[in-house]
Length: 441
Image 1: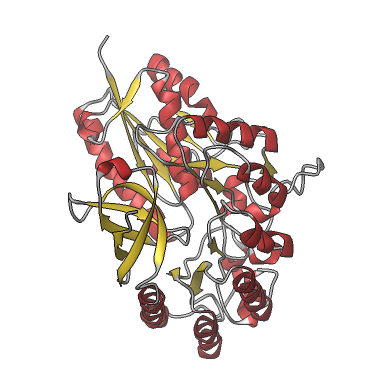
Image 2: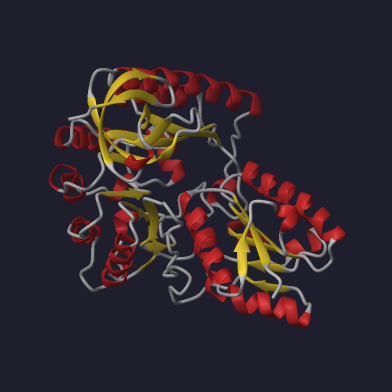
């Protein structure tokens, strides 16, 4: 039988990466082998993100490139998946001719049957309905050979409806998997050699709250902390309004919980936070970061910041800068506000000019680079425990891994160290990584 090849292009967050892993598993059962060469593929899938306009533009640019391959090979199957597919649905077929398959965030588990319909009936398929089940969330993706880390989705959807965000409309309402399913999946991953798991959800802090079965995120972390073979636990993303004292306390009490939290602030101005419908004040956010550092002084705090939200004045922007100076994040993801159709912010007036947004973003990123460099330089001379992930991209003689606080470390070492915890003395802190030397007994 002739081999069939699958190529997946993924845009967006860690959740999208995990969704793509699940797609690959489902199609592997249908005889498809993954390839990095799109020209070699029999099926091309684009897994999209719709969080910002730029991500949408990139996705359609990639789709246009892949459709050129379909012109050369009419039997090639081209599929468009993810949040943008959920958002646009059948309109994609009219925007780009000859796309075979469009499916949204709740229909990943149906990929094999959708592919069969395309192949046997040679018809276009569109599936963007929301499901009341969690079938697409619990698909087990075996780790690739040599992998030491894995993603585990614990919930899907969001009930927050922040003014700028399309996620609740594209991922649906909040639903949580059972603790038993999650723990069972992680135990299976541990038996396969996985040492670090990253728990995924739009708002992991609210895990289990709607189930009515007494499950909550803190108790779930405790169960995972007890799983033999798992050395590190990470999670993303947290909503500041739901960051409880009990969860903060976990950073001091759970040995395996990594000393890092991604806590999107979005703004440091109370007036803008209210317009964003974030549900907390800048003072409350600052207080929570202070509590985190009291419980775990070595914790790394990273964040998201949006500049140029409608109505943001120079004073509002300065309040964000002042917040950054007080907190001094280890790193941030920063963006110009991007209007998304269907969100509450779309109707807001007082749009900030594009030139002003660009200038504010540039200044903010310069400030954050200074803070990041200060944080990384402060680690020089310290000993950090590094989970070795593989060879460094910079040198064939070096290995790379991460600290508990999410810092990349490069050092000389033997490949047999991959997958192990290694003490490394940091010799130099750079803007995007650390360099060090292994401490040998």
